[in-house]
Image (cartoon, rainbow, N blue to C red):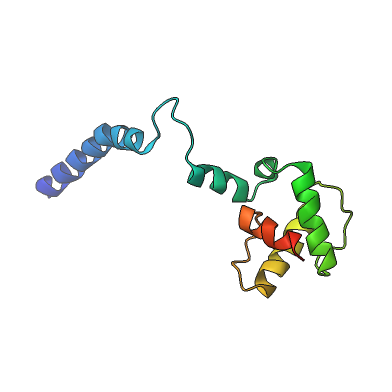
Length: 114
């Protein structure tokens, strides 16, 4: 029983010691430019704040494409909102894409051709 307790304490100490060091290795170096993949991910995340990476004109273009397809019934005003996200999810499902409700470069390009 003492051996098991000693192993558990050793594992906890090791995790506390190495955990922060290993986490630091996963972070990009300070001042490193974000990769194209990182920037694309930022554009495709769900929160409204992340949608701010899209210009009002780009959001308006997406809303216009969704409205033309009958997916969006709201105001075409370039403001990302829940109705826009829900319409995009429906459009994505209909186009056999992952229904994330997130705008991406590829999605926007396809919506412009609607």
